[in-house]
Length: 105
Image: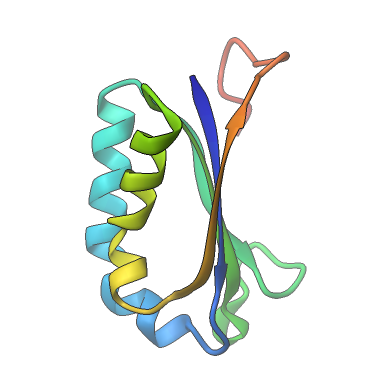
């Protein structure tokens, strides 16, 4: 099943994000390589592709896991959690009713 993982950043998280980013991206790449990642990305703090020093307010991941507990365990082990980037992480089942055949970005 697909799961939505929505994570909200602590204030001024950009320095923490930068340090933990390589390990965070490596885990996402592993999900992608396994064909289990639909999308992932940060939520800019301002209305801009590159928010620069404004940074980010959180992250969104949609990925496939065998169960809610597996999705929660994966989210809990995120390097951004260990680095203190996230103030809160929410994991919910997601029923996808429309999915593009090809990536649109």
